[in-house]
Length: 424
Image 1: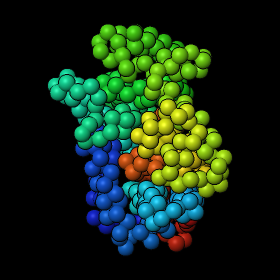
Image 2: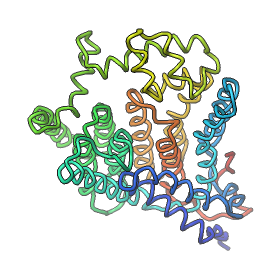
Image 3: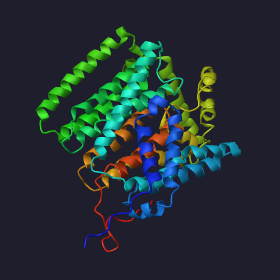
Image 4: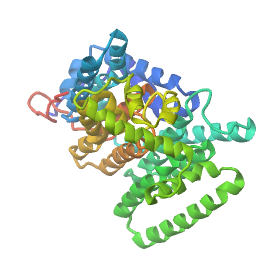
């Protein structure tokens, strides 16, 4: 006698989960800031269901839930200790998606399917095409210098488009007889959109994301010689494109590499890069003034003002954060928050490494590594975790990769234990 099938998810939960997938992978650069709130609404619909206890019992165990909950509690503690009034406590809600994502994983685990990696690849490709279309319209049709406004911040646009472009390769790595060549368009379109955006920080992440993609391609390819030839040709093409970019009016986007080289070599840097270095120097001093719990999320910039040159104080006051993820967490939430930030930055990869080596493992691992590597590089010049747009994006994508992009487990009953019970 075969064991009974798992009970199906309620219809509204299934619809909410599919809505979440479309909104977070296809629409973020098309509808902009509103995307965040649509994702949150879909997540709330998915978890405000009597099916949650059953989903929690059926979900495979994973460390990602306890880490998300622990990070939220630690950051909340730091913000409570440093709070000067009730308004400071409101910033705790910036991190509430960490809690919301936990039951979302339980619900998505019951929707796992053998073609999930291919599906995610197609969704990311659609999102990248939409984002590139927006860039073409705004730059060539409307004459904008930067892409994204007024629907979203230009940095949010560029970072998200790059991520979606490279995540498209999940479909390339996915098992099965499907066509793989279309997924190679994702990184190319993501790079084009980043150049059109005029954002230097996004393109600085391109070598890292290309290296991750190439490493996975080399690991799974049966024709490594052709892969190396193709990689060499791509490098030549990218160098040529970077050389031509200033002549085509897109020099700002590729200036980041030159600025970074000058900064590391001790050469002259531009005003924007100098501001970032002044912030980092001031952040180090401010961190040691309140090393355990920090100065508070709202006071991270005021905390560095006594430690920057007098002629830079007014300039620094115009910023909302320190344009570096680690520095912002260190000053705003102290060592407690900085450790939480570090754990959040790696837990998607750790969680995937603890999943079974099923047929979608390579795609699942690639998605997690790309997500973490992208956020790591992008947060060297911008704060992402802590802003609702990128916090929601990060935690929900991580849970989808861990729970949804995997082969379904065999049906089981009380006499056939199946996967270990979820701890969070």
